Image (cartoon, rainbow, N blue to C red; front, side):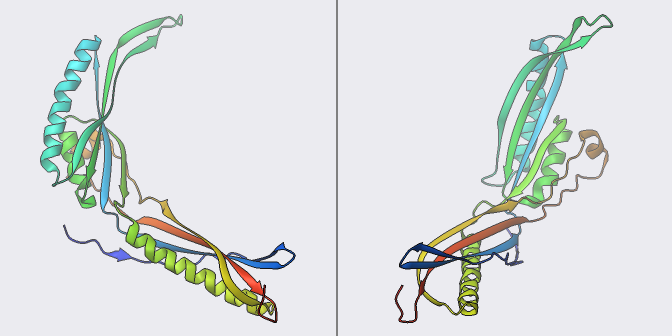
Length: 238
């Protein structure tokens, strides 16, 4: 698979340094630094559904099973090595209408089979959806993009956020005529801040078009680092 390019947009979020006196003989400075990166996703997660109606629960479920089998065959033929398609939920429930007198009237039974697809090539999402809808899927529940491994990206982000925190500590202590001592504590974090853009399409509209256009967008990661420094007096002690 062609390696996806990373697009870094490092942004520092300013946080005010905080001076404190933890005890009579201990002065500290707390600083926070942040960094953000926007990276190309490496995974597409698609959830779609096969919905059927029948006069009986048996008929509805049987028709759903037939269509679902076709969807699985079609989708799995479109997947790459290591990709998967599995059932995420299945339900059969009665559907009612009400007459003018408010009486409940049984219309039939609805069967809903949700299928979750995980693909290692985000660009294949449109083709997978087309294959699924042409073979029997009639509802797209969710399309999202993710990163399978954020380790390397987070390592770089934490370094950037830590550097920002350290720079704030130097600037703040210098401005107040204080001298920085050793670091008392460091609290780093890194997580996905927002997912790439998601588009939803009706099955009928997508089937009439030449193909389902899906734009993976980017995955936004954010790191925050909080550091607490000891402050020294003129003699170099705390």
